[in-house]
Length: 260
Ligand code: GLP
Image (tube, rainbow, N blue to C red; front, side, top):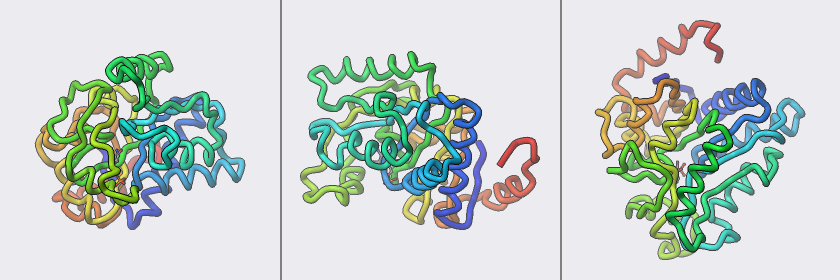
């Protein structure tokens, strides 16, 4: 796993956007794995700026969101379908027909989940998957004790996740109790993983994911199983990493042929 400690959230966003852009420049019809939440918003803003400046074209790329709430309408401003449209599809100039979000309103949620995994496979798999991390170590909505082999499925949100996400809703009781999320097994099939985290509140989860044991108690520790996973963090999110100096040294001495 590559761990890059950067001075601040803006530097994290810049490097993450550069890496996503590099994938799309190599392959204009790349398949992007999209995360919601506040962690990747700076990355999306940087990508949007590159698109607006004519330096990047995402019109042929496709996208698959990690997850969606169950039980709120697609049109709800906090449904992930709305969030992805507002923060990704529109500002990045992506084709709405190529941007997919699990259907949290499906009559048969189990079938919708299976169909979602099939759609990712049909698209050729995800080239680069952006990830945030929950304070409890979740990625997507894979809460602690999610199987490393899990596929897209229905999950019950942990009380802590509902509390963390209450800030997006008028009333905490409005936060859905269930979701559809790509499984850890689904996420691990992406060809490249890019986890971004900022702030002290994520420090413990980042340390557990990077340096802790491989454990479903910290779902993000599944990144240790991936051959091409990078964790981009600001100083605050890196503050509990025991080998921080080694990561700094490694990045400072990164061979040029490996890219930024
Ligand atoms: C959310 C999402 C995750 C996200 C995580 C962290 O609820 N389902 O994909 O990475 O929790 O959220 P944030 O980035 O807002 O801290």
